Image 1 (spheres, rainbow, N blue to C red):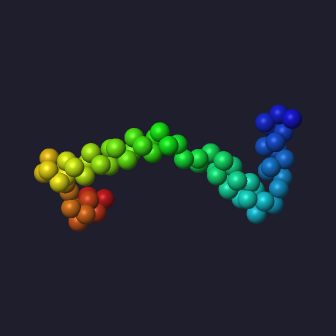
Image 2 (image 1 turned 120 degrees about the vertical axis):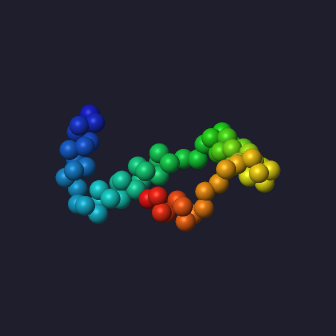
Length: 68
């Protein structure tokens, strides 16, 4: 069965069944990656340390939302 066959069959499903399939597919792709999580954890700690040491320039929430 080709991808186009699967797509054709999926598009013939009821909207609620297509949504369920979408959720299942999304969960299958959204798996945590410990290596990436570790890199982000190190980056977050680096930024907190820089903030605590006064080496990180910050912007107030008021400024952020004003600029939007």
